[in-house]
Length: 557
Image: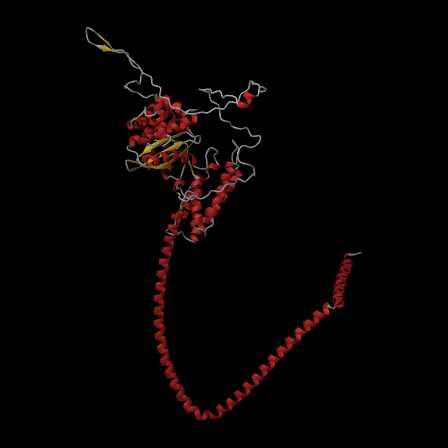
C-alpha cells in the first residue's frame, strides 16, 4: 500500500469517526437541545436588534420633520430678520472680543502662578530628597552591628539568636552508648578513712570479707605557705671590729622575699585573668588566711620584671614572625592616662603573636614592629598604611562580607551587592573544602575572576544609572575598592598559604580588649608597653608549655 493511499484511508477514518460522534450527539438529543437553545438565543438577539432599529428609525423620522419645519420657518423669516441678525452678531462679536482680552489676561496670570508653584514644588522635592538622604544615613548608622560592620559583638545590646545547621537527633543529652567516657582522674590520697561495715553484715555471719573494695575520693584545695628561712651567723673581728656573715642566695635581698610561685600567681591573675590589682592582693590574702598581704606596688612591678626577664625569648619570637611567609596585622584602641593610644598585633597563622604599644597610628605606629621590615604577605582589614609594607596583601573577606550585607540592607534596589556576597561565600567555601596540599583549579579560579569582574561592571552600571546618595556612600566606596584591589581580594585563590580572613589577629586582640575593659585606662606608656610585651610571651608559652603557671614561676623565680 502506497503512502498516499494510507493517508487517504486515515483521513476517511478520522472523518468517519467525527461523523459518528456527531450522530451520537444527535441520537442522544443533547446536540438538538444545545442547537435549540442557541437558536432561541439568536432569535432573541435579532428581535432586540430589530426593536432598537425601529426606535432609531422613528427618532430619525421625527427629527427629519422637525428639521424640515424649522428650515421652512427660518427661510420664510430670513429676509425679515437679516438686519436684526447682523446687529445681534455685531454685538456678540464685541462681547467675544472683550472676553478674549479678559481670558488672555487670566491666562498670563495663571501661567505666572503655575511657574511659581513649580518653583515651590522643585524646592520641596529638593528638601524631601535631602531629608530622605539624611534618613538613609541615620538608618544605616542604626543598623550597624557586628554582623555587617567592623563593630565588635560586645557593642550590640540586644543580641540576636544565631541559627545553626545542626539537626535534632532525638537522642538523650549526655554520653551515648558505646562512647568512651571521661571519668574524673583519681588523686593520691593524703588521708584514708576506712568505713565501718553495715550492721546487716555484722549481724549475719554468712557475709565474708572479699579482697575488693569500693573507693571514692573527695578532693579539696588548701593553699599552704611554705617559708624557707635563711640564717647567717654574724662574726666580729676582735682586733678590727669588722663584721661578716655568709652570703645569701641570689634574690634573697630583703627581710621577706617572695618566690616565683607567688609572683606568677599574682601576675597571671592580673594580666591573664584580667583581675584588678586590689582584688589580686585581697584574694591572695583570703587564700592564706591573712598571712600574705602583697602591696599594690609590687604587683604592678611584676609586669616590668617579667618583661625584662623575657627579652631573649621575645627577640627570638620577633625573628620567627619576621620569617613567616604570611602575617596577620590589626590594631585596637587603648587609653593611657586618659589619652588615646593604640595596640598593634602581629601574628602568624600558627598562633605566634606579638603586641606593640604605640601612641599613634599610621607609619609612626608601624615603626619598631615586625611589619616595618616584613617582606612576606600581609593580611589586614584594608588599612591603607599596611599597603606600604610587605610584598603582597590579602583583604579580610569577613569584613568585606559585612560591608556587603550593610549595602544590601541600605541599598535593597541594587543587585551587584547580593551577587558579590554569594560569590565570595562560594569562593571561600570552595577554598576551605580543599584537602591539604591541594592547589586550586586554575580553570575554576578563572571562572570566579570572570564572575567577579562581571559583578563589578554591574555595580558600575547601577551606580551610573542611579547614583549613590550623598548620605550613604559606603556601598559605592566598597565597589570602588573592590574594583581597584581585585588581586588583593582574591589572592587566597592563588596561594594556599594565604587565609581568607584576618580572624587570627581579631582573636588575639580580644585578649587585650578584655584587659582594656577591666583596666579602663592605664597609668603610663611604660606600664602599657610592659603589658603588651608580657601578653606576647604568655600567648606563646600557653601554646608550647603544658603548665603555664610553672613556666612563669621559673622565669620570675
